[in-house]
Structures are given as C-alpha cells and as structure tokens.
Length: 410
Image (cartoon, rainbow, N blue to C red):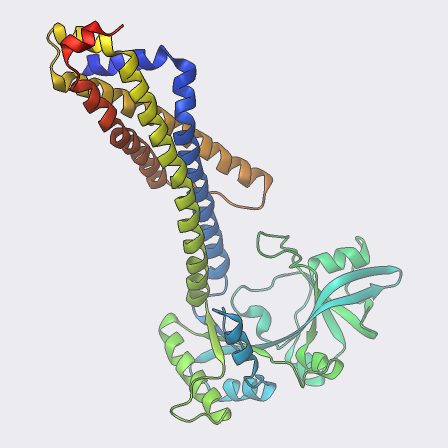
C-alpha cells in the first residue's frame, strides 16, 4: 500500500544513487522533451497557418487551372493538359455571376530585373492585376500614392505600383511617386508604393514585386500560353456556395463540358488550403511523435533493468522488512513507487527541457511556438505510466522473495 512513508523511502533510495538515477532518467527525459517540442512547434505552425490563410477571406475563392495540391506527379501531368483560364473566362464570370460581389484577375511573371538610374533590383515579380484585385481577401495597403483606376486598366497605361522592398532597393529613401522606372526594357511611371510586410515563415521576398494594370501586362508579355488566376468574393458567407455554383456553371459552359465530364479547372478556398496543411502536418506529427515514443520505451526498459538491479542489491533489506512484518503488497508498493517517482521526475525534467527547446527554436528560427497544456499533461501521464508499466515486474519479483532466503543474502 503506497503512503507517505513509502514515497519518502522511494526518494531516499533514488537519492542514494544520484548519478545512476539521472542516467536512468535520460531516456524518459529525451522522449518527453521531444514530444513537447514537436507538439509545440506543430501547434504553433497550425496557428500561424490559420492566421495566414484566414487573410484569404471566408467569402473569397479563386479559380485556377491547377488544384491546390497534387497527390502524385501523374496528377500534375493530367492537370497540365487542362485548357488555360483566359481573360474571356474572367469577363464572363464578372458579367454572369449574380452572387459574386467582386471579381479580380492576376497574371504573374517571376524573377525580373527592375532599374532606376544607377540602381537595380533583381528577382522582382511582375504582376498584372485588374482593378478590384488589391481589395479582395487581404487588402493591399499603400504607404504612398494610389491604386489603379478603371481608366488605367481600360487604357493600358504604363504605370506601376511598387512593393516596399522594391521601392527601398531602387530609390534608397527618395520619394518614388512620379518617377519612371525600367521593367524588362519598358518605362513605367510609379503611382503607388505598397506597405512593406516583411518576410515571414512561408513568404520570403513577398515585398519584392511590381504591379502593372492587367491590360498593360498583356500587351507587354505573351499570355497566350499562360493561365490567369481569377479571384471571386461573395457578399456574405451564405452567398459563397451560390457564387461557387454560378462560377462552376459558367466555366463548364465555356469549356463545353457535358454532364458526365469532370471539371477541368479548380477552386481554391481557405478551408481547402487548411485541409491540405492539416494533412501534411498530421503525417509529420504522427511520425515525429512515434520516433519520440521510441525514446520513452527505451527509457522504460532502462528503468526496469535498473529496478531489477536494485532488487538484487537490496535483497537483504527486503528480507529484514518482511521479517519485521512487511506484507507482500508493502514491498510491491515500495518498488512500484520508486519506479513511478523515477519516471515522473524524468517526465518533469523532460517537460522543462521540451518547453525550453521550443522557446529556443522560436527565438532563433522563424518557426513559431505554442505550448499546449494538454500536451504537457499527456507527456507527464505517459512518462509516469511508463514507470508503472516497466516497474511491475521488478516490484513483483521483490515482493515474492522468500524472507528466509533474503536474510541469508550478503
């Protein structure tokens, strides 16, 4: 029967062999610390991605040639054969979708050279956008200047809006508004500068861009082999499904699909992006926690081995206790208590080490951290259970010792 005296004896026995006890704890400490660190980082990433994807908007979806994620390379090759989405598709959706509050279109051109007098900015993305695009989902705020107007789009004017990083690299603190820059050999007047967001975990270089009116982009670059991305925003959450059905009907009619044909285009929503992310991190979580659990099992085996050694070393002590009236369950409780206390201490040290590791990862890397109380409680419970499970055999062996034989032991 485990009582206060039994727990006291357990601590005394462990304190008598401090180094051995610590070495025994290492497996449990490493296992628990790994679980805490992995869970903290995964939870932090999930929260980060939720915040990022929520900026996409719960009433916003996009129409793309490709799906959000591919299961294999064959799926990519299959979708690559789909027809490109064109500006005619965009205009048809804009004109025919009743539940679509706003529509926007985007073309992209990567890794371009942008110049202003003696300054250059390399690897700058060039984007051709429609008039509503900056206001859909996460609004693109400007630190100076203005957005494109409908007249700018209609007339295909040679104007541009700079990303914050591009403006800094080209103008070195000067006011860019009204200046003319060179983009791939073309001259464009700067009419706006976007607020600089800074690099994030999954968005490195997101401020290195220039925007052109989409009609200007089409005139400048060959879009015959490109697919435009169409963004759609419904007025309310309840209009979202209706808007998607209307857009699907319009696209299927334009692509001459029959009732039996599958869609040859894809929708992307915030929920779809989160499902892909959860599927990815769920697999990573299971693998890493499984690997960390191996350390816990190894730690439990080490505890059992040390407790068996302890039973052998303390055979005479067990005989004396039995001769003085200790019952079998008292001996069982004593050694079980020592095993559980040993693993519980390892669990607490592992939790502290895991939280520290997660904090250091967040401090010195872009990875966020969120320590969940349920993870801490689960890790401590599992660590204690490991001690209980692997301590049963040594404790029962000690409890079954014959007191006469035990007293003869040297």
